[in-house]
Length: 397
Image 1 (cartoon, rainbow, N blue to C red):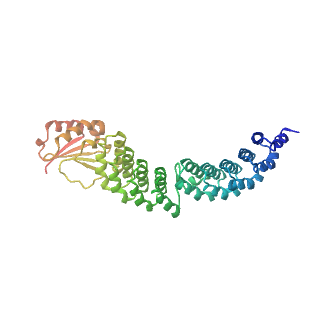
Image 2 (cartoon, rainbow, N blue to C red):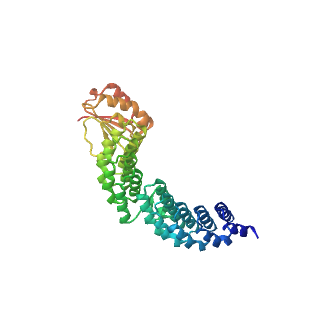
Image 3 (cartoon, helix red, strand yellow):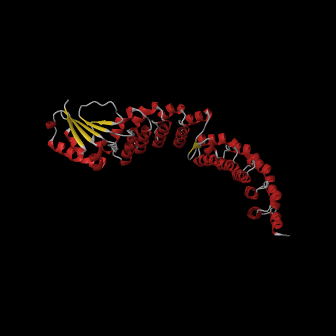
């Protein structure tokens, strides 16, 4: 009698420990001759023998085991046995197991649900997409949700129809979008966060109002994903809510709101972003400056005093300290009203302009236009501009 035959014989031993040890040994060997005896062992009175037999059948991968494993998955008394059956079906990978595994996503035992989700990912059948998506959104157990999301990735849905990073990257049709919108009201914060992220990836305008509502969520992670999602959709309806989010208590939310506003071409965002340049957090200030650099592709003029300008996108009027970090690489003109300019701000600008504009750029490209009586301008300013800039032009009002 060879080793395989001996182990098969031991599957009928009086001791359950011997029987499950024999099943485990057959799993490691992986010989197909053991398939039928292991299938019979699925009916053993001891759960430990059953789940070791199921494990062995999964490793061997013989299609003869599919129907018996499906039966155990649906009817096994022990959660551990049903879990092992689900794992085994995933390893075998027969599409015949898809529907039974989908039903197992509703099993009362969370370990069985987790294994069923993993198995569906290994089988890779698209029939499992919607049930797995629902499990991501409705499941109470975080480990099961995680396994369901990873299963969706394995199926390849994330590349093809895009369901959100970590859980759902993108979905295409109206039914799933409605499900995600509904999930924004889920009692679990991470489900709400994943739903917001997914809606942003999809980019459907139907999600704008629900995402705006999510900006008031009690969890900062959800608010952060909501501002990111609104930035991805780039809908003008989100401008005012995103401006309000610039003063959120969480710095990541403020950063996300600044980035989002930088993607929306709307003049209302300029002043709030400028104010954000004075935020206490450096990462928020950086995001605000980055957003402004997108809104202002080129700042060509700075005005000090009461002089009108028609182009808000290329002109800063009455510069504030916080604005000194705005990119000024395209600056060509400084305009000063000698009667109404702010002394302190001009002084600060001269001090900082060498660092933020560059002395070489100032001397080569920037002209200073002074309107009104130049004697009303502090003499040090006039000398500084003549030394720093290409030309100083004095004009009457």
